[in-house]
Length: 338
Image 1: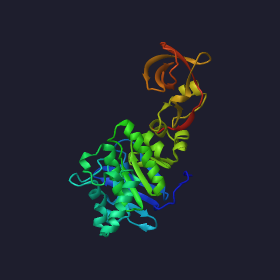
Image 2: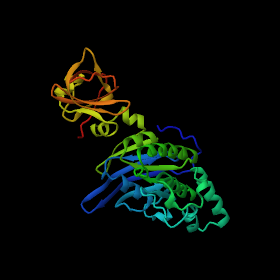
Image 3: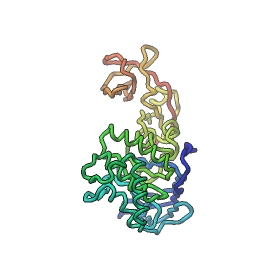
Image 4: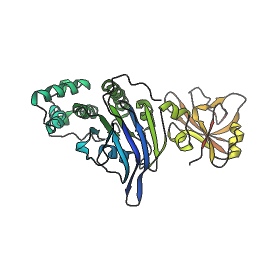
């Protein structure tokens, strides 16, 4: 079940039924089916080349599937081009017109839709106020920072009041601090508007922070779908466990039994979150420290424990020694798909 949507839902649901897309010998999207609830924030997460951007482009109408159907609300839009769909795309590079002012960029889509000048003026002001950029109305977009340009791209998108807003890695060009701030603002804006949002990213932290639901993709397929906490705490496969948050994956039955007491077969693996490998003074298994990485609030330590590498995420008060004792406090059996 998804988290509740606090704003009145103004968006439409999106449904993909057995959608596929091939480019030559590459099956980029492989029989994908998804149900995206109206008003939700839904992320497509996966490594580069997994098919997530192609799936987004199929929803938008920039790509047509070779098989399957796409529905927005109750309407089958599979063969409608992008201009005829109630969707809008926010691109990675913002796609702003550099020769135009902020106002001209935001009202462009409204002019295309032949909205009256007075109505356009009100809509532009309202859209810029929503992203706290009202004071930049007549500013050239080329004089804005990357974060400000991102807000203008958002304002332009929401100005046309789409049923579905699509994001193709829109924060990847921002620095870390600005990305985190913009992420907070983006989520708040989506909540206020109640628009259905479909978001493509390879950044698992971004997906966890923003999403009501996440679909993890690999090689054109959907591997697992669910709310962020469920995917993190209950991964169904070794790939999901390792990609979403990072895990130690044990595929050898002897290692699994030794470290966790769990019995597995060749189709199974044991996933151990790195924060579930605890450094202890006694009662653990000793390992050799291979590397340490100070990451601010935590330190990430790579250990060799009885011939098996384990990654530990722990607090910074761990002794600076060449050997440490560790204890595994939680683990689970998952599908071995590595």
